[in-house]
Image (cartoon, rainbow, N blue to C red; front, side, top):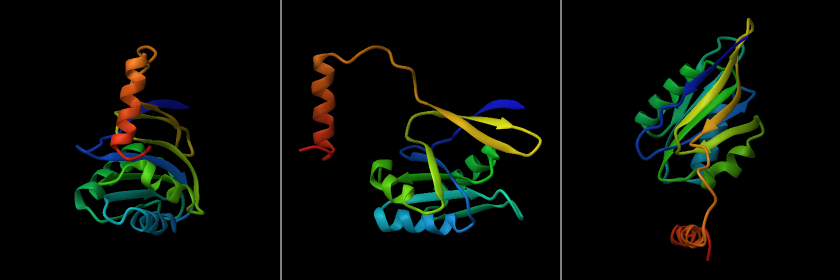
Length: 160
């Protein structure tokens, strides 16, 4: 078995979701989850089949983000995985809808941070072992940091 790290390319101002799903219907169902939950968001998604023709299936409403999702999916080379890239919404706005798609098995990450996906390759194919999402902690928040975090959440409208 070979293990490698695959760097995800996230376009400027975009957020990324990487997950696992199990059926060709995933591409359209993920599209519907995105448009039904965040209709103003721009997004692209790629779903990699793991059987039959083993194609990368594409959906979305933004050509640049569809292209970037496709490139990330091809870089991963892992069957039954999906990549969603979005602008105009945050993962927190769509994650529950994506997780509720019946074919979705799980989410590996949802972020705007630099991400590396840890991939294992065997004679059968490639699969995601996990992700490295952003940087390691550099310390523990101070009282000032707590106040700034709480203020940021209220400024974004996530807390009252």
